Length: 159
Image 1 (cartoon, rainbow, N blue to C red):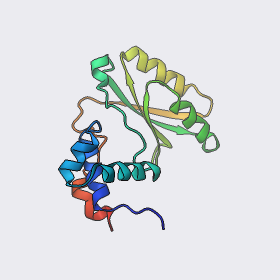
Image 2: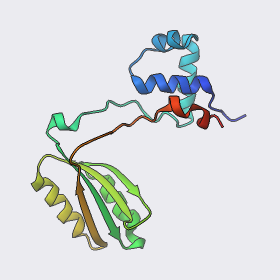
Image 3: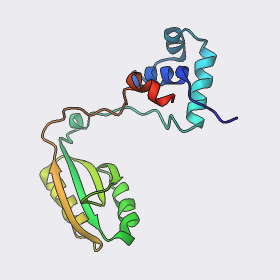
């Protein structure tokens, strides 16, 4: 029988999204279950691919990377995967998305200086299979969250 996600799994995920460094004991006490249960559920969620990894969320601005660019790219279709692989290996790139609409790919990248951004965009735009780039600079971050509000979506998840 395949593993299924239940309410307890979601409650554990909610706690981990709040603080992935919480101990098994803390989560178990909060949810009124045994530590072993939490341990087994977390392993199940990892095995299922629901939990991919535990990583810190770094404030890139504190490291001097104050410029966030969202870059739309139009490319020749047969070379799209090649372009995406190149973008995914770029150290400044935090996300690469296949999208519908005007662009084929949207990439998000962080830069220390306008010169770094300019150099990056020129390099990408100069690739032989890139038809067009369109760069937007983020002026203000209203919401940037890597967590989904599972508390509000729990019933939808369990459908």
